[in-house]
Image 1 (cartoon, rainbow, N blue to C red):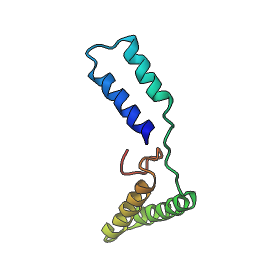
Image 2 (image 1 turned 90 degrees about the horizontal axis):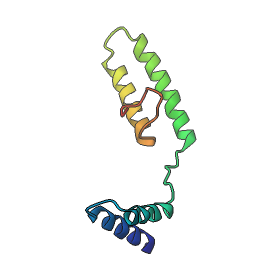
Image 3 (image 1 turned 90 degrees about the vertical axis):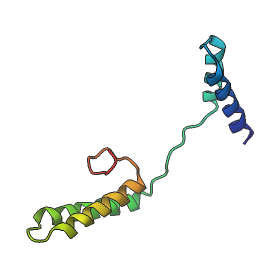
Image 4 (image 1 turned 180 degrees about the vertical axis):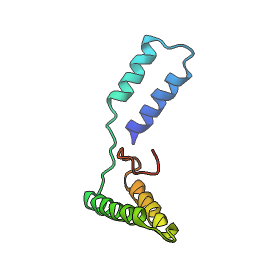
Length: 97
């Protein structure tokens, strides 16, 4: 917790600087060195289930010929669930691209 507080203070002092000097850059660099990359852990079996369900729902919606609103609503709901699991998936099927 102290590391986070110290990093916040360092970055705040760097933001307050009126000009970017070597000292300011060194402070920012030092703060960044200690930070670790944060990654979201994705439940791969859940994503596989959602992918399969989405593929099936899309196929059903595309072949629908009468009163298709429910079919497309299902696609939208599965896409939303997929997006919640992994906010952005670069496969052209998410809501948030």
